[in-house]
Image 1 (tube, rainbow, N blue to C red):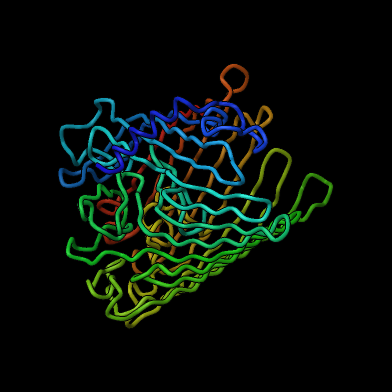
Image 2 (cartoon, rainbow, N blue to C red; image 1 turned 45 degrees about the vertical axis):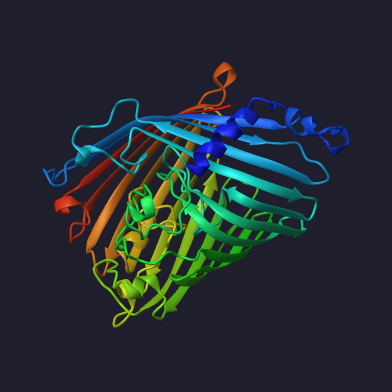
Length: 448
């Protein structure tokens, strides 16, 4: 209710903002100038998601979701480096919800006909060296980000700061306080391991194994650094998911510029994770991850990438290994990922559209992926094949196709996309009835 009232107030302010670019400080003479010389943009989305199970029974039938959403972003002009921003999101099922709730793909926008939320409302300070934000905001880090593959994105109540000592090098600090999932209408002290109705949260699509009696999470601390220079990209992060796990993560890649149009690529990533004690929510509630409870978080993983950038395209081969930790480790060493679990939005190289090793647990995987563009990249075709060999959920493989078309001219900003993936194999009902699962996502977007 609190956010809905604020949303109404901000919606009124949106009408006073301009669609022009940000104004320079020198042109701001009155308070009203902050708004009239501000900026508004947005996006319209219409998505049609279909989950087709070869083993479709009354208890787990094939499911569909169809709906549309509008995302509005507004930012005031800057005065002495200070500005304010807000984003409203509203989604509607457009009368498409099935009478049988089990036939609704609740990952798209939950189980209700409509969803409205205040996804950003922040104060910002920015100069040549520092940008700091306080309030509701989108985050863009490897293990705590927008997960923006549905009608509305994840967002967070947080304090964040980016320090830029030199061009290409950023140092980022974040204190996350509460979380709004992509199917939630407010911010809660939870994450993807909590139940759908926890404290009234409409959280769907996560792991959701914790009971309603589980204690609240205390949030997250994160510290990271990113560096980009020529063909080199590198980043390192430390996360303290309070009451859950502590994670260290790093990745890097290098593109060798040959001048021939064929540029080799190498990449590497690594992760280590720990956590234990009676205050650990997973331990205290004996939560089984991939069927295994434990007394501590103990996970390690690594990955490698070999690829080549070609004219209008790219080809890559990826590998990941998550070590099995038998004994007292939760999930036998499964990666604990509070904001990507079951979303398949983590940064592991071999993660597919439906799932990856975060969801399937310890084991190894390889993936081949090809991307090619036509008509000055207006049309992009993507194909991928991934093979997983896991210790707890058997062997399975995923085949993926992605067709993207970006319009130009009068329809610039309009995109049509169709993502299709089929997952086969596995045990323990990784796919319903251990039969193939096909997921098709048709996505129409218009950015303005």
